[in-house]
Image (cartoon, rainbow, N blue to C red; front, side, top):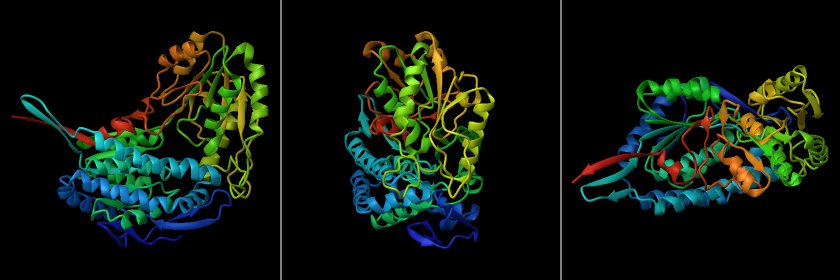
Length: 467
């Protein structure tokens, strides 16, 4: 899948840049495709098209916006298996996980946003004034590689329904799925300039978008370091910014908890997608006197997470997404050993035919170690013992991040603990983190929310008209 054009103003056009980005299959290190590496001139063309389109699109009837998003949903429904196959090749996750966690939930997201906008009051009348909710303008969307389709849809759906236009820069690691999405957008008859695709490197395309005077808003998902850099550029001319960034989320097992339930929820978060999720429960806080029992159960349960090549239908844990990610996760595993943590499961990774890192569990971890403080973004879990519930809460909150978490134990106590954790989302026992609910973080985990009416409101301005 070698693409040589970009999508601007409703047409596939040649980029000014002659540079390309090769796309690697992390399971085999094989080059499976390539896309243009756009430059500032390409970005300027895309932003201009989006700006011109916004002049009319902002006034389009809501029914028209709903119609094109419904058409997009229909186009994507016919390509579920094809999209899953591309994600397996680009990202390296298992086929079943790709279909049921990377594709289908985000098609449901489109339907959710359609339902939200139909009931949302875009205009409210008061006795002496009217409040209107109007689109922000031209949106620069910078999306990550770990959920390469879903993170585009979570930005695209509310932005388009709100009446904005978009310039998208997908991750340079996983751009092929963005091309498939763009082909579906073309077939769905999006008006010219409403959606534009400019693939490229973050240091070039991403920075130009963030710094562009005609971009009204930047919505970014990625690392905290990347978000800070984007914010510095975007804030120069007071752009609106939403950031969905990193995490170091705690799972807290209280006395009296259902250990199997707690560990199923925790290991799913750490192992699925090979741990490459900002909301992974990468710190497991356990009562000191129950640590040995919990460790034995982790060893037993980890055997159910099949590790290997994603072409095997039974594979749950595949390779990490790139050489860069392999080196990063490997560094932290070595660092954990150096810091005195004990490897309960796993070993120092060895590079092979792909970027494979198996399930890795450290015990005897304290919260001051690098493996407990920094986001690793791999299938790595740190077990941290505590003596009192108050200490567990203190450890959970002793982090620069505040994105997600879980509390497992007697219902009333677990709920009280959950209220004291400084995080944007948290699960109690068998609760499920739903796509239709707001998602976002406290502290260094981001600004703003995605999903629900709160995610829609990020793409709306508020105007008061006095009568």
